Amino acid sequence: MDGPAYAAAPIISAKVAAYLARHRMDAVTPLPDAGTIEAVINAAFWASLRREEGYIPRISLALLSREEAVEPLVFERPLRLAPDALTRIAPVVEHAGIHLGVWPEGGDLFVWGTIRAIPSFCLVVEAPAPGLLVVKHPTEEEARKFVNVAVIEGDQVKVVDPHASSLPDCPDLVTSLLGFDSPAGWSGSLNVLVQLAVSMRAHGRGGSLLVVPAGSESWRGSILTPMPYGVSPPFAELTTLSRENPGDESGRLLWKEKLTDAVDAIAGLTAVDGAAVMNSNYEVLGFGAKIARRKGRPHIEQVTLTEPIEGDLAVLAHPEQLGGTRHLSAAQFVQDQQDAIALVASQDGRFTVFAWSPCEGMVHAHRVDALLL
Image (tube, rainbow, N blue to C red; front, side, top):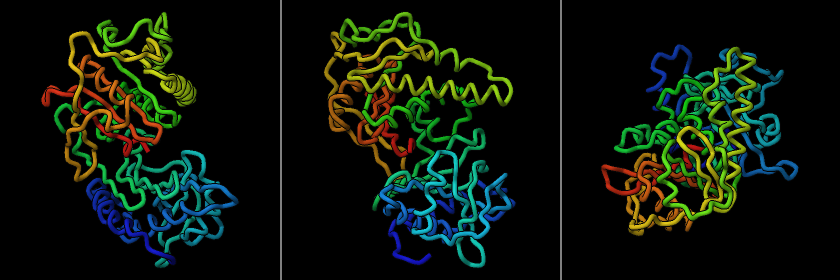
C-alpha cells in the first residue's frame, strides 16, 4: 500500500498473526500473514483520519477471500486497498454487521466486496472513531459475538491478555467479555451483563449499575432512603426474556430484538444521576439511587486496579483516581456489600467492573473498556 506508514502497525501485526496461528491450527484455508495484517491496519488507520463530505468514516475490514465468503456482494472491479478508496466506500459498511472483504491478489491487497456472515476467527479490523482501531474476530459459539484481540489508539497498543480470566477472583463478567467462556446461547446469564455493559458505554452519559443478590435486602443498608425512583413490583421483562426458549430461527430473531430493546431500556436508566439497581435475576429494583457508606463500615481508601491486557501490572489506587465520585461510591458499595458487583461507565468511554476479592481482601477494579469496543 502506498502512503505513510503507521508506526503501531508492525508492532501489532506479528502478534496478531501468531494469535491466529495458535487458534486456527487446523485451518485448511490460508491465514493472513503479518505483512497483510500490517497493510490492512495501516490503511484503516489513515482512512479513519480522513473526512468524506464532512462525515467521519467508520470502517470494518474482514480479511477473507471471496471463495470463503457466504452470499457476499462482489464488486465487478475490486478496489485497491488505499485510505482514499476506503473513505469513499465507508458508508456501505456504516451499519453494524457489514464488512468490506479484503484479500491479496497478484501480490497486492484489494477490497473485493461486502460480507455480512463471517466465520469464527476471521480477522476483522474496525475503525469506530478517528485514530482508534479494534482488531477482533467472531467466536465459535455466536457469530455476532466478537472477541477483541487488540485495541490501537494513536501510539497506544493494547493486546488483550486471554489469561486474565484465570486470575484469582476474576468476575464471570470479565471472563465472558474475554470470550473464553462457553455461554449456552445469546441469553446466557453472563452475556446479559455483557450486553448491558456495552449499552451503558454506548449511551455516552456515564452511569452505574449495581447488581445485588436476588432475595437479599442487605444492599438497602448502603442506599439513602427513600430511593428517588424505586420500582415496585420489580421490573422483570429482562428476567422473562432471558429465560425464554425462542424456538425456530424466525422466533429467535424476534426474541433477540426484544432482548436488545430491553437491555437498552435498562441501560438508559443508568444515565440518570445516581445508580440503577438490579438483582442477579435481572429484575430492576430502582434507579437514581444515592450510595452511602454502610453504618459501621470504614471509608474505602484504595482498590486493586488491573486491565486485561498484556504487560499490565496490578496497582493500588484511590477509587476517585479512576474517574471521580461515581467510581468512589461504587467501590464503597462493593466494599460494604461484598456479594454484589458494580458496573461503572465514564462519559469518556472508560468502563470499570468493581468486585470484592477475597484473595486480596479488598475491592478489585477491572478496567474492561478495551473489551467493549
